[in-house]
Length: 181
Image (cartoon, rainbow, N blue to C red; front, side, top):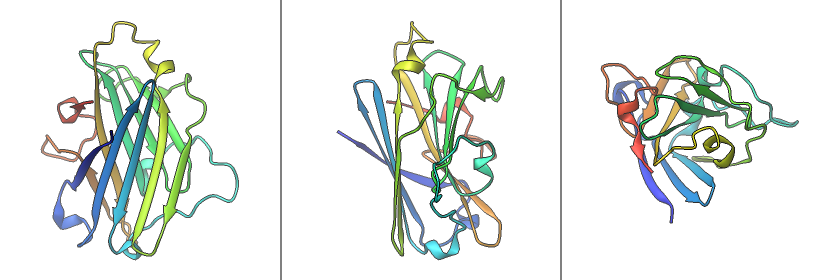
């Protein structure tokens, strides 16, 4: 059964009024299915259109509208960061610890995804296979997750959305903002 989660902007003053961002997460055996649903005046946002060709693994997606998931094994300082553009471009990074040792995760070579867009609604979903990741963490006893998003307005300013913001600045890498799954 999918767990539904509301994401909140770090600062409501920087987020376009009347936007609502909800996510759902569901664990299917060794697959993690994540879906984001953004509702409201999407014309205020800079949302990249779907690519005409095959989506690519790219860096820097977080610099514009991007949906993200941070995943960790409980008790392990390492974690993964997954970025997905509404255009379909993606990346998955492995980190050794807090913002340390960022590198592409070689165990995953594709990220199955879908996107549906209407006038006032955008839904983006992807499935992350966990088995290749968990093989690296044989002693894992549980998993933690943080779902986040960067929403860029047409004027260039970004708002930062997450399940919870636990620091004085928007910082998706803070492990105390992750929740058990």
